[in-house]
Length: 116
Image 1: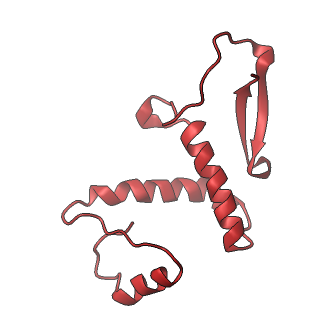
Image 2: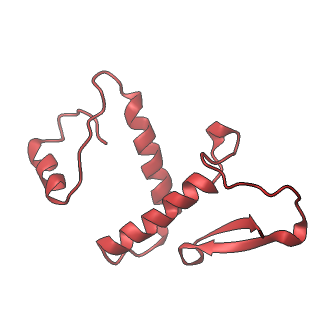
């Protein structure tokens, strides 16, 4: 997703297309639309890619897939009263002994889940 600024040329779009990336332009006169994409990229950089050494495109795809799952099911979002967009189902009864730590991305991030 990109804006319609003049610094993005046709050759820039061609490089992305050769890499298999579809370019989606934001609607005209809607600068707020790009904010969502920029915020997600900033979050991914701060929480993931700035803390890891990426070895290949396959490695990047694998860690981004795992991070997006965490982002949508476990990570709190301020705009949603600290609830994730698609939270995991909660059991009826909660006990402290049933909570366990689940490291993801090699321990870079930890999720806390209830035992089933």
